[in-house]
Length: 157
Image (cartoon, rainbow, N blue to C red):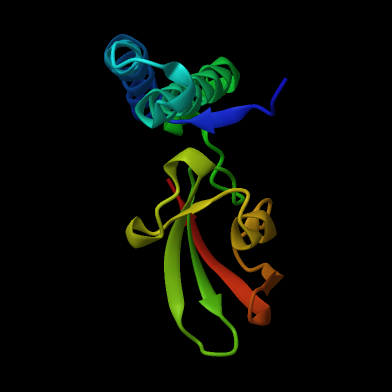
């Protein structure tokens, strides 16, 4: 079985709605596309049929992956988060020691990561490097451009 995935209640609801959409709407559309292609004659030389079957296979794989993710999903409650150290769902302000620039990131699950919203995945290099650190600690993190040292300035929810 897969690793546990921690998500917020809102993300879990979004995942459930997406799975429902895939199963109740898109699965039926894929079946209709196969049936329509089948009506067009010889299946050996029917590219439309082959494409519809391939699309159905991809859809079923996506449904299976989502079901697995939902089975391993656990809801995180922000009120139970310890802000004495960096953990999932905390917002951490870090300063790049080389550039002296500060930025605040929220540490989230892979499913919720969105760099534009300053939400980084707990499994990203920076996310992993910050986990467990406390205010005043330094974290030396290997990123694609090399090693960067960050100072932990502030941790909140």
